[in-house]
Amino acid sequence: MSEKKFYITTPIYYVNDNPHIGHAYTTILADVLSRYHRVEGDEVFFLTGLDEHGQKVQQAAEARKLSPQEHCDDLAPRFMQLWEKLEIQNDDFIRTTQQRHVTVVQTVLQKVYDAGDVYSDEYEGWYSVAEERFITETEKESGEFRDVKKLKERNWFFRMGKYQQQLIDYINDHPEFIRPEHRRNEVLGFLRQPLGDLCISRPKSRMGWGIELPFDKDYVTYVWFDALLNYITGPGYLADDKNFQKWWPASVHLIGKDILTTHAVYWSTMLFSLGLPLPKTIFAHGWWLTGDTKMSKSLGNIVNPLDLIDEYGIDSVRYYLMREMVLGQDANFTMASFVKRYNSDLANDFGNLLNRVSGLIGKNFDGCVPDAGQLTPDENDIKDEANRLEARVKELIGELRLNEAIEETLQLVRRVNKYLEHQAPWKVAKTDLTRAGTILYTATEALRISAVHLSPVIPFKSGAVLDVLGASGTDPQWGGLKAGTKLKSHEALFPRLEVPK
Ligand code: MSP
Image 1 (cartoon, rainbow, N blue to C red):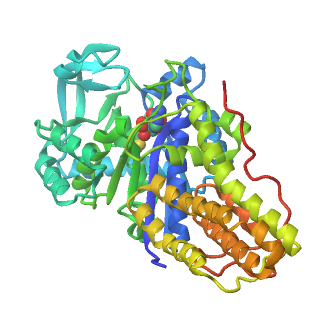
Image 2: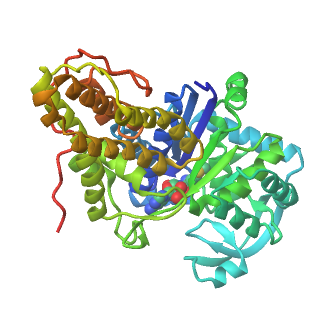
Image 3: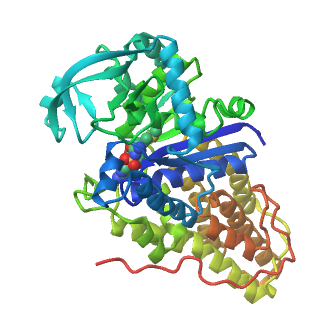
């Protein structure tokens, strides 16, 4: 038991639409990592929430003929209910319209202003309405920005450029700060160009939905300057110093690759200005694609997590999303790969192992776990492998190699299935019941240990396995399964699915 502190965050999602699978992915990922850390004995603070200000939200509200606040109050529960349904165990849920956050944003703005890091200037440039920010000439020429118009405006600027070298040095000195490696290189590449200052205000006359600047009531705060601060509002910056000191800096900010610059550059320089330490790691994951394109509302290819859950169950969805994506790379969501993964790992390997051992123990031992008896080298190999898994899973989770942690656990399950085929306890039972008992104890104990390791990913089904084995709350070291325990009857854990046509 390491008993460290682990503070993990997700991006706060824009409340311009219903949550989709991309949002569900990051939130489940944060939940799974939190649960692994809790199992390891760490103290965890897991923060998620909603980004409620800015133009996108304002426009979404206008389209629905609601005030922005009414719109947010209407959509917020949809996110919260989805997280509940997905068994997300977050410790806090932040909404940027909450007073605690407004206070932090305004106090921070005043601090940064007093420190001389904010100035007012007239600026003329290309403004992307869709992206809600001024873009450079090169960006405009790339043709990737919609709704671009020339805009001349007086605004407030944050002296971001002044921290450029400090940030480059920091990134070079802290290899674990931006991950994976290729994202770190991307940020360093971006920082090779002169870093300009950041426009942090929007005139109310043009865009009114935001937090008012404490030093200029004609302006509201740029949505990113507001949103990033949620990570310090959550643990109690300026409100609960003890709690804040306890949790800050965050262990991991999980983000999608599209919001890397805002986190690695805007957020870091804001923290420099405030004199606060930077988060230990910013981890940018890839996108879920459908048929090689990003899911988006405009393309109409969004996978709705609720539909999937209703049809296949929460654990199957959690498992697929966690196992299928190599952290840091894109992954392609298809129903065919969903069903394939479900059938191979959950139905054939994990679910089948439970069916086999409980069936054989039912038939030959009256449903009671047999004695472990005398282990031969075959059993000792399995025992050693199962015991080694705890350190290995911990190491992989520490390195955010989640899909590998899951795969190594499944390898144990597969190995035990093979062991059963090879040992054929159903035959052995006819001549040597003691030996058959040893084989079944070994297989069942390895199943129990696998279930413990999978419980952060598939909490319900792992919980069900442990319940059948009378082993809820046991740890992942050999010997937790007690001989004589009467197994509970159960249904098939993961019934096989038909392959979609
Ligand atoms: N509100 C900002 C984040 C502010 S954090 C201080 C935002 N919100 S968002 O709702 O547009 O996106 C939130 C996250 O969802 C981003 O990390 C984004 O990468 C992620 N995803 C959106 N679509 C996705 C996929 N198709 N696949 C995986 N993640 C995706 O940006």
